[in-house]
Image (tube, rainbow, N blue to C red):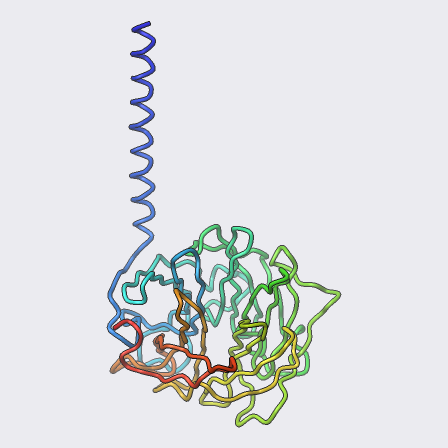
Length: 334
């Protein structure tokens, strides 16, 4: 009897040691994924590298921000080799994970064109919809919001053949995705026009019966639609924001249906300093609404090809429309 008790106690002790060791190793593995931490001091939020084309995802109590990584100042063209992922729980203290995805991970895509993208979660998987200038929209998948991500298809989900009605080669870019209340996932994209399709439950194929449609944006616009669609739903209305003109401003339109037609409203974000482009993410996090965008604000090397993400508050009017965003140096971290 005593031998049996001794054996059980010894076995439990060994199991406890193994569990403790495993927990320590797991914690160490997780910590090595974080490559940089900092306290934001206003805008731009990220200053240790150049970042652009922000997308955002709230998972549990954490806000994840996904961007492309621009080359340092002095560039004469876009040279974006990889995407980045940053995170925060309080909008003040941020950390960066290891590079989660590279343009070269899509062997069919352009290797220096990690263009605008968005990540969304479904059924415990995280799907990253990307674009790469002339080669179309890809999708990568991961079990974790910080990655790493892998090409889910080995080919583009959409190409220029799907973006009908326009002829220029960079029209199939800037995907934005959301899942409606009825479980239907929608994807929008485009430069020069905006196209929309229904994603299937697997999130890596689309509904061929519904097909692909061009979004109808009605009303008088100060500037033509350029690119950078971002879709959201609020109080039963669909809000589609996008870049207009060039240099770009951000405007938006509203619809009662996800596919439109959309009624144009107004410009809500003026030209961001020292950058010809802009690309927004609009997200609710811990009771506040935020507008994430980029400018060329890192001195003295920032510019249109070396951009930096910024965050400011976004507010709605009583009727549900969006108030113009005030771009600030202070940002939201103070």
